[in-house]
Amino acid sequence: MPEKTDPRILRTRKLIMDAFMTLSEKKKFKDITIKDITQEATVNRATFYYHFTDKYDLLDKVLKEDLMINVCQEIGEHEVINEETIKSVFLTVTKFNASMSTRCPDSFAAFTDRIENLIKEDMQQLFLTILSKQFPDQHEHSLRVAAVMLSWSIYGATEDWKKNCDLPAEDYVAYVVPYIMKGTDSLIAEPI
Image (cartoon, rainbow, N blue to C red; front, top):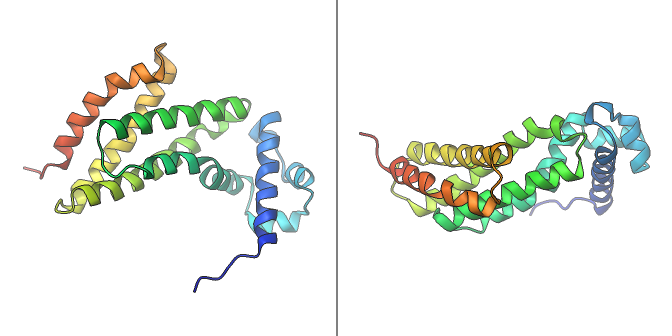
């Protein structure tokens, strides 16, 4: 039977994460110190280091455990890769990135690479799970390649939309879906 985590530990961890998010709304990531975080969270340094190795570890955990939950839940709600899935995931990622750039405008640039990597890794894992169920007879390598291509394609499309397009995300994704769906059909096929 799995061991339960003491609720006080969970509360303290959440307190530190919330303090970090509050600070990142006011300061650039590079300017946030451990002292700032511990003062905001009203904990001591030893408590901080019990939970996190440094502020980069804290950043990764905040993104993975707190912010990415919505993105992962959205992808995980789908049982097959189809047009609806592609649209839904695209819109979820664009909303997540917009939320991050609004919540933490000064720190968003510092978070961008980490956010991109986390989103692509999580999407890849979730797509692989869906594809494995959808195509149980396909070779594992083919499914992994398809999951990688899907996650990178969708994330790349969200970046293109953000940087180069003035269409609403809902309209832009209509251009994305046919390319991804055609690519998905061929990625799932056995290699020649």
